Length: 352
Image (cartoon, rainbow, N blue to C red; front, side, top):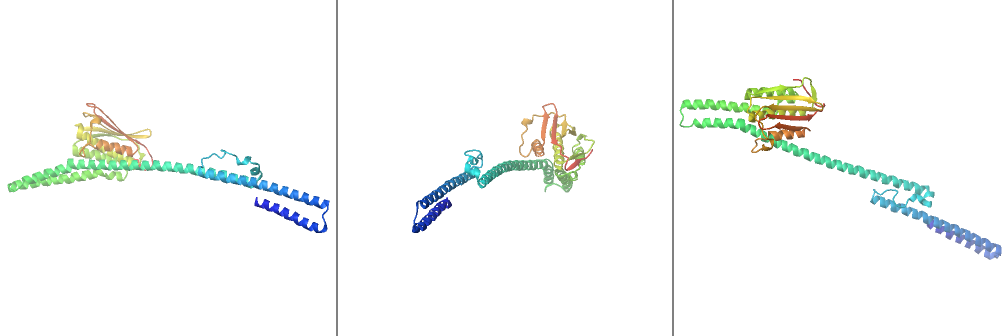
């Protein structure tokens, strides 16, 4: 616009200069007419330039305002409001058309970036919630495991050592040499039993066979331990063919058999049980069955570190992506059923 105004002043200066020169030699009608026509045409052209420049400036200001509006709210539809391409000036200027297209592209990129950022934020929130839930489950499982370990030590090592202390108390100052010798021998046997019990608890806490991925050997050793320690018979049914099994699933299955059979020994009042492992489609199914008196699962409450086995099994199954089902009723025996998804990635499930 300033260039157009400057052009108008240039026309005026040129006509004025020409008139000043012509005045010295005399100005006739023809010269006056020529100067008037030149001045009029020049001013009209300058006026047209001013009008054109003002419209171009208005178009640029509209583009600027639209860009600011989009920057503040990228969700605005580009077709919303006045379409800049409908303006004659904008359409006739390739530079302004290109600028409008660049603004559309920038807005589209901004909208896509906002959507990607929002999706990433939602994914981060979901991942954070999943990690928190996983950590909560791990803490709960750890506490339950500690409770189970405490219960095992209380039922075995602590009671044996308490018996040894009672025997030594009886061999006090009032006892003769023969009584003292007998008491020391009995106490020695009790301490040796406590040592064996500690080793058994350590073996149950971390079976050596599972470190090599041999679930069948670990369960076989568990079966022999129950036979030797509790005079308890376990009828075992095992897959004939190997199948890939992650280590976490192998540990979960082993703990399921361990805790399930221990519950039978403690509470079912029977001398045998059945344990089986099968592949059912895309799931691994492990079961422990007994013909004991059964119970009502809703009435089982853990207290003082006792009766935490079922809760621990449920938590282990959940963390491994599976589920635990308890099928029992008073007088109908009990069946514990563990279902885990198969995933052929880590280790293999060997044949029996």
